[in-house]
Image (cartoon, rainbow, N blue to C red; front, side, top):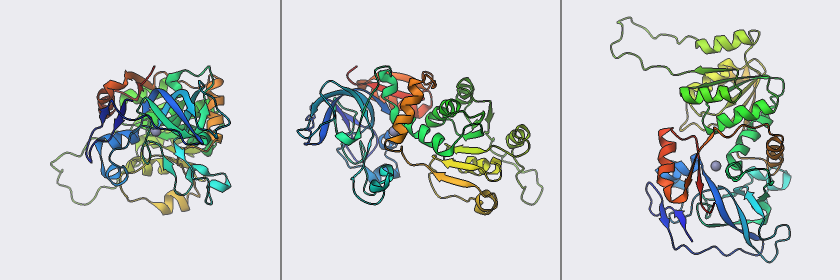
Length: 363
Ligand code: ZN
């Protein structure tokens, strides 16, 4: 079969046209992949950053977001049949340990991730345990079914923060931030304020239902200082004052942090109202200075770390939102390319020209 794999301990991926088709174990399902989404995680693997170098085994087939048709089932599989159209949760729980046994399998100890710890879906075929399979409703198109994994991240974040009838601030409208706009709107957020430094994405966020979009780009300071001595205390950014004015002076009830950028995180907490809820999904690239005293303790903020999707509560919520016709994803999934054009797909993501890029494998 064809497969995109990590051919060397360095950047990029290679297409192998003669990879062996995986043989499903007794409790596994073999799926012929139709479409697969390129994730930010795949981009880290493509670029071979420090995280990828520390985590990704050379030789692995990458990719974890997909839709496909069941080709073969293991001898002990009871719930699925050949020919069914399915996606899958890419976090594979060991089924043992505290979290797996107490309803939190998405953060189970010794979790294995598809396309990170074991062969993934950028291939003609992928093998997953029966427990991870998600049957796709016939009314959900392949293009959407291929990106249920990241959409699930957005749904989990929004649902964890409880946005109904609340003013919400989303800092960072990349792929998942944009998905969070349409999910928050569908989940009953009364007003949605967004920040980013990319004007096109801010404009798209407004088309998806954001009430106000603020460009938080700050130009670098001039090279020649004016000559005045002493450090300048940074003023509260004007966009925070505007959100406060719009929210009785309080600030937003909920912060959904999607950027991982230190300035955006600090500003987001500054904006958050006293006693508000912050759900954090963005991942800073390194430790940074954060005003815990004022941002969390004195603010009495409720802070939620968001990791993955709840198995499978988030999947049911996501399906309901999709079947209700409440989500706008067409403009977020910007490209659908043949798998052979994977290098173009990664470049489109790197340049920012593409938002969500999907590869057509057998579709
Ligand atoms: Zn992903």
